[in-house]
Amino acid sequence: MAKITIDGVEYDEANLSDKARTQVANLRATEAELARQQSLVAMLQAARLKYVDLLKAELPEPNAKKASRSRAKTTKTAKTAKNTKTAKAK
Image (tube, rainbow, N blue to C red; front, side, top):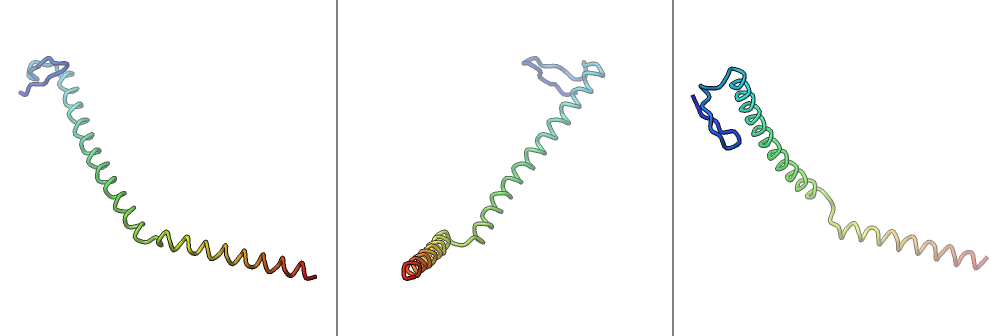
C-alpha cells in the first residue's frame, strides 16, 4: 500500500487501522473535491472577465454620454434664461 505523511511522520497505509484508512480515504476525496472546486472557481472568474469585456463592448462611449449631458444642460440653461427674460418683460 501507499505511504502517507502526517505532520512530518510517514505511515504505511497497510499498517493503519480500518478507521484510520477510512479517514485517509475521506481526506483524499476531500482534496479531490477541493481541486475540482478550485478549477470551477478559476473557470467562473475567467467567464466573469469575458462577460465584463462583452458588456464594455456594448456600452456607449463615455465621451458621447458626457456630450449628451452637456447638451441637456445647455438646453435647460437656455430655457431657464428664456423664462427669466419672459418674466422680466411682464
